[in-house]
Length: 268
Ligand SMILES: C[S@@+](CC[C@H](N)C(=O)[O-])C[C@H]1O[C@@H](n2cnc3c(N)ncnc32)[C@H](O)[C@@H]1O
Image (cartoon, rainbow, N blue to C red; front, side):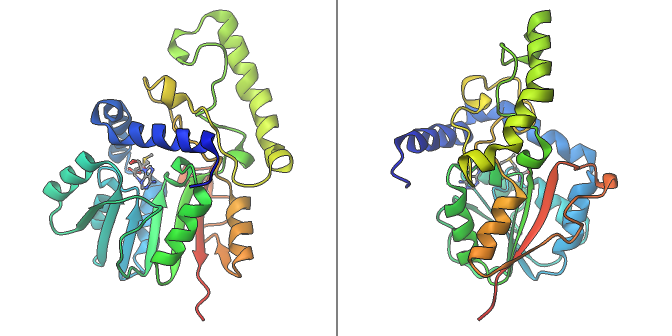
């Protein structure tokens, strides 16, 4: 897709990670634990989406956010797409009233949703620009994107820190090196990354690929998602990015390092 063989290998490996049930199981259980939290950030997303008559969710996983939307009273048309076939099959059985499709963000099936949204998915894209272009093509109005801002926060769960990747197995020296990496080395490297490397930076070796267990937040992130990239990308298209809950999110949402961005397509 890019001609860069390193990205092509990474893309193949990530697809396999998400698609193969035996590789995915621990990851899916980890993501699904959030459902029990009834998280305020996710409730804020549901409240925001109420304004659209139809929404398309990119990377819907087990349908967790579909359930959040319905609990919040969302009455519009919902379609969820996801690359893991078995996960979509379970969504279809559990929620036959909604639309579920096995498809990826680089080739979104035809439809006519008012908006698309993705929650914790942007950072999974090896080709984020391509996915954004495709989302913009597929919707009538808005792209609602919720993602961690790794550059501003200085945290990146997919970057190995310390000597041993599995934190629970660490020895004292490793704990110290890990602490140094997470608190000093990594934040400094992340904050200068765009200046050194440009936009849309990809981590070619996310921890998830070589150490799939136990999962930790964002251990599968390949794209170093950040608000600045989305702002520049939208500006180059003559489009606006809005932050309905503020560019820095309120503490009460318990998502300080995340972004809640809405790209409004300019209608000609
Ligand atoms: C962290 S999970 C989030 C799932 C769901 N949004 C949630 O919060 O429960 C990321 C999801 O993105 C999906 N994904 C990864 N690459 C994708 C792609 N190219 N197109 C669509 N979905 C993708 C993965 O299979 C995974 O289900």
